Image (cartoon, rainbow, N blue to C red; front, top):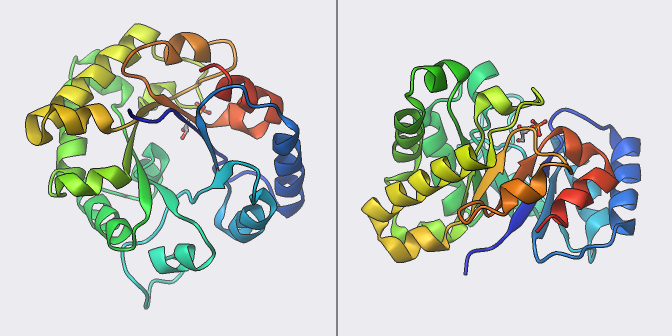
Length: 249
Ligand code: 13P
């Protein structure tokens, strides 16, 4: 059975004090669902967040990492560094990284390899732009993003891969994909996985939806059979809203 996961991507928000406060608030929330809960603070707050979240059932994860093990990459963070403070999962390939930091399928394939080599679980993000959807190209864009960055992996590696479909036009815009649009794309992603790796593997991989998920729309989106959870931006910055989404399962 694949897992339900709700992950909060805090992006470049919250200094150390706000991080402390938000984690304290998150720990006060009641969890009534079976979803795994994750939060992704910025690098400077990871260690502190990790320490504060121990025994809370909330996993602290990274937003990004570099593909090299170490060396002359000013401003970057390696898989080993994340591991050294206890971090076991990272987001990779977020559309903001692709758009503003020139991340490509090729560089992401290298990052995925570095994560696998270090036994770090990856939440791999991808999704089409509005222009792709208007042109009816959303499926082919998503297919090539997945194939180019992930299809060199062995089947075994997928125990450490979570997929996150985040249509760019729905991120931070207040405009969500309809539950049907999300379901259609998630079913297509699972079919793409099945064609390469077989049905059993495709059925075992969690596929999250991201893009303006809020307490008032989470239940309907999560009710779709191929939607296994959410990657939450804005609504993850308020403890009550985030747990309303966690508890939408
Ligand atoms: P919003 O929930 O703010 O649209 O952000 C989604 C996202 O980018 C999560 O990674």
